[in-house]
Amino acid sequence: MNSEGYPELMHKGLNAIEQESYVEALMLVEHAHHKQDTPLARSYLAYCLARVNQDYQQALTLCQDALRADPHVSDHYLNMGRIYLLIGKREQALQIFKQGIKLGPNATLLSELKKFERRQPVVFSNMQRSNRLNRIFGKLMSFIGLR
Image (tube, rainbow, N blue to C red; front, top):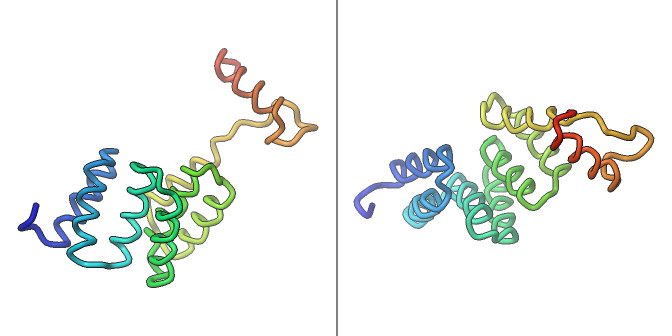
């Protein structure tokens, strides 16, 4: 791995992320980041840190730095949105994904956005989706196969 350059390390790191081998991806992207500190390396390093180490604060800081340095790259929005999803902040993730998709086509970003469309209707329409009864009965109905 020491003889490989930044492009090769990033390519392998991104492939590892696609394969959901996040520990391997973290090592590769971190090594690429040490070779060359680019916004892209910071952005993917942020996602890997959040995914593997649950270091959400550092991940958000790194990703925000990448966005400030290069705001026209949709991958930064993808990674920021994924971090927000890991934290449980769905609304922020959705907003970030929408901002990123405006920059141009990105198949991975689009697939993340489509996951938001898969939600079932609420069980009790007179209550908010976040209401505890809606959440419990929705999960129960999904579990027993009625949804």
